Length: 312
Ligand SMILES: [Fe+2]
Ligand SMILES: [Fe+2]
Image (cartoon, rainbow, N blue to C red; front, top):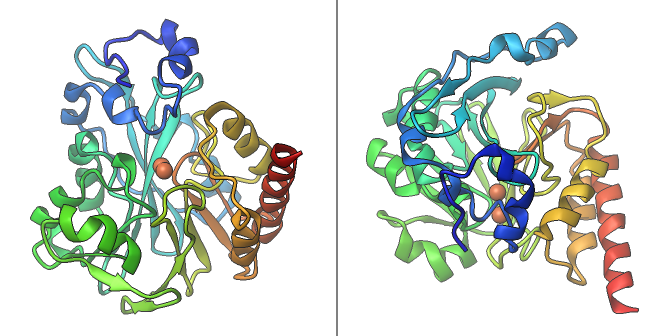
């Protein structure tokens, strides 16, 4: 179902009814074309201290209003050493708006996790180019095949001649061998790519949070788990939060119903907790360095509980 790109914010409360599947999946239809053509990408903000976290506040934001479109901004924050979060808040997605986050790992072979939808390519690519030259990008990765995860995949392949898409073998076989303009690199479960200064481990998570080809990525040097849509929550929060992320994620789940409740959902998420991540990097919402494994276990328990309720 298509959302109106000209809908005023006063209609936000009814947006989830207009897009009953998920406001997330419909967001690229909600972004005015003109919005993606006006960049407000900013210089990266350093992370690591409370003072640094405080800088994620409004004084570092410079919203720009696209003509005839929504107020949009793209913020860049370093959430772990050499790991940058590039975030665009879309006020029209869901009743409280939703952030769309891409992550860049700075290394000898720079890696991007999530491309953003095609219509955000001008904003996202400009933000990246402030950190590394676009044609230096070596790896294009994402959690699963949806427009917000990989809509701009071929735009980045065109901008970065040496870049390869890397994904699980299943995702390549089912979709990416056909969709990607260059042959993707097939990864086995647990396979590691050495980026030179950083090492990323590919982990298959079929159907978790959704889509058969779903996967996550774990950067071993910084202990950063790129969670994709896990812990999705609404609103325009800071790049890093010390607050609980499980409650907001369950509230968003009630709103969107985006997660596949399967016999493996809880077990798969618990397996991620055993990685002992130091940072959870979220595609939608604030990332965190607090209680990472504990939050994964609590999320797994909540989905176990939902599944039991559904079966009784
Ligand atoms: Fe998704
Ligand atoms: Fe997403």
